Amino acid sequence: MSGHSAYVPKSGFGKWMDARLPLARLVYDSFVAYPVPRNLNNWYTFGAILSLMLVVQLLTGIVLAMNYVPNTTMAFDSVEHIMRNVNYGWLLRYMHFNGASFFFIAVYIHIFRGFYYGSYKNPREVLWILGVIIFILMMATAFMGYVLPWGQMSFWGATVITNFFTAIPIVGDSIQQLLLGGAVVANPTLNRFFSLHYLLPFMIVGVVILHVWALHVTGQTNPTGVEVKSEQDTVPFTPYATMKDLLAMTVFLLVFAYFIFYMPNFLGAPENYVRADSLKTPSEIVPEWYFLPFYAILRAITFDIGIPFTDIVLINSKLGGVMAMFGSLLIFFVVPWLDTSKVRSATYRPLFKQFFWIFVLVCIGLGYLGAKPAEGIYTTLAQILTFWYFFHFIVILPVLGLIEKPKPIPASITEAVLAKNGVAKS
Amino acid sequence: MSATDTTEPTRRDILYIATGAVGAVGVASFAWPFIDQMNPDASTRALAKVEVDISSVETGRSLVVKWQGKPIFIRNRTEKEIEEANAVSLEDLKDKIARNENLKDSSAAATDANRVVSGKENWLIQVGICTHLGCIPLGEQGDFDGWFCPCHGSHYDTAGRIRKGPAPENLLVPPYEFLSDTLVKIG
Image (cartoon, rainbow over the protein chains, first blue to last red):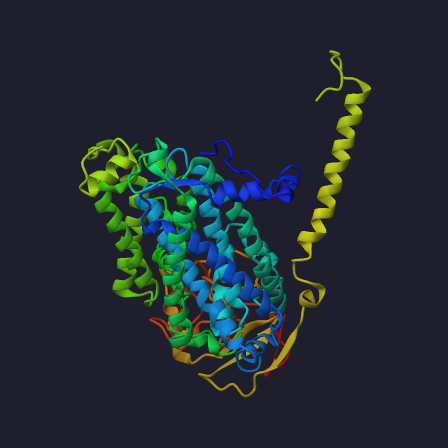
């Protein structure tokens, strides 16, 4: 859709500038005249919401860093100082703290929307992969940010997560030492996590620019999954998409504000208001809610994988759990090639639609189990759901594309829109 | 990468390659300090040795001390606990290696005797870090009366050996020596 530019500078300065640095032209072509499919629904507004949340996190984070001290002796107190003494410190911290959760709410909806409408399919594989990279950077940033208040969950969360690396044979311990700056989580760890927590969001901004660039090269998908065929299928970005996005942002921010002002600690663990104690592990370590499905997968692997009928262990349970957890994330990268169906949208894929919703329930179930103790029936259920999680990607996606009979696909977006609204075909 | 269209490599080709090689070595050698600064610094590395007075630890009681930032469990075991540990056959162990840094043989069997000092079998001294993901197990709990890690449900027996759950190895026995009957030096 990167066609010819429709930008015409009006003022003399505009013409002078356009001949030297055509920034106004870039903005006009990308966010004003840019054609978007006319049938985008509300699920397509989460990209804009995510950009907004990134800005919210950057702004609140930069001002919080003006008052925070990344030192084990002072970190916990400096957060309380922000909450009690700094002007509006409580608001800024609650915005940042809840902002992380709302960032993940938006990204999960955005990812599931991509799964439902087949947004990752040819020719949008690179767009999808850039999105997965952003998601992984977000998780790293959120994890390191959670360590900074230096509460019990901060400390023990950091301990557990960095211990993942000791599962790697031979070099694991050295990698963990390199990450922590010592044998255990301590001041060097807190210092570097602060530095990286400040750096990574700017790297996210960089990848987001590539993500949007890739989006504007291929154009957006839409609920029908049919590519734009004529100008009739599109509307200009401004005012149509701009207004739709602004409305969605407003609604999203209202819910966000409700959490900030009325239930600011609902999404956090009370245990993290207890100062970190390196000699006492909390009775239950539970990560933030947005990591729970992955945490459940980690804990589901309680068995060694070896050669049957011998004592030879190829992958012990610890390495197996870590591999399953990272695998559950890395498998996103190859989804464009695992899904063999040529039809994009689940609207025209009756079987895929059912398996999509089963997959959503499996993810929610894993999230529920991640918050439960790792014993008895919970472990068994987590193992079943973990199996299904990988089964969905490795078996269901490729096989469905071969056996499923899709519904008839409309000839164009316009035809689908008119058919839906009961207007005769023009 | 050839500068001219001659069939033989010229003097200029060699100069190009040599310059490129020097550049690559230069970049690599200056990248290393940026990576190595993340490794443990001199103050962290300074191998602290801790001397602990254990005279106050009665039979059936434990003491936790800090060594190199890690918790060290010092337990004065009861007769029953030692008997329980000895009664376990090696076949039932998930990790059959002693994991005792005081032993010369790093693959010694995980018998109870190999986890303690001969003549002082009641004293079990180990690093109190779960070998799964680094939590601190709770004492006198779990299915084997030893330690239980609440994070992911690993059970250790009265000799600190992993018996059930996701942890792969027995609790590590750090280097230590008894300076006297009541004084032990760790490290």
